[in-house]
Length: 263
Figure 1 (cartoon, helix red, strand yellow):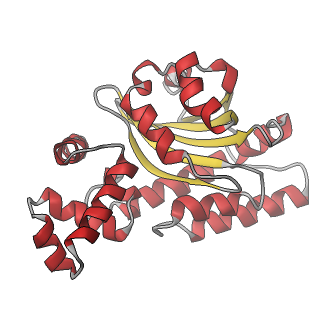
Figure 2 (cartoon, helix red, strand yellow):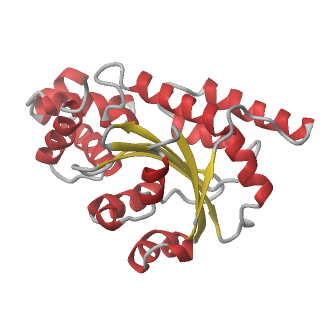
């Protein structure tokens, strides 16, 4: 594992590297607030650097983590399946962020580099081996007094390992990427609280979940949205899958736990 400090401002080794990085960052900024941010932002980043997956989630000391964006590029999207495994139990014994917590007492953000072999056997088999992932780079920052935000970039076995130059390039662009992601989380949650767990859902999925939280029946939601009850259930199931939950009471617990944290 590598723990890498971030520079105060980005500088690149060549005009070509700088140009590609700037174009990618402009693309990421242009997708802020869009419901397709998870897919689009990763596609933009691939104009600069090959990445197969990415994810954005928040971790807390006293409640399960929350996923806010994810996407894949050039391979099947297993981010949601992996998230369900992680949120179900793996996060409880995940020690990959311990060193970041120590460093964040002095810095506002750090970059972590992990190879698949460095994860615990259960973690590695459920996510990395299962989906052919070889390594992860994570931009980690403090979210509040008891939480972290992690922006995770993955490469698979068919891609080359991150080179020292690529790690350094991501280190240099980490701060603007972190600002862009945090801005997206804020705008996506503007109908509720900043960084709402529902921010990662599509508009229709959020509309269904919002009404479930208000105690509406499937038939009532269907009438209000002018769709069938079966369609409402489809949106509900998709939303629950993205959120890593299975029941209505888990939705209440997830949102309630978040709202208690908002000042």
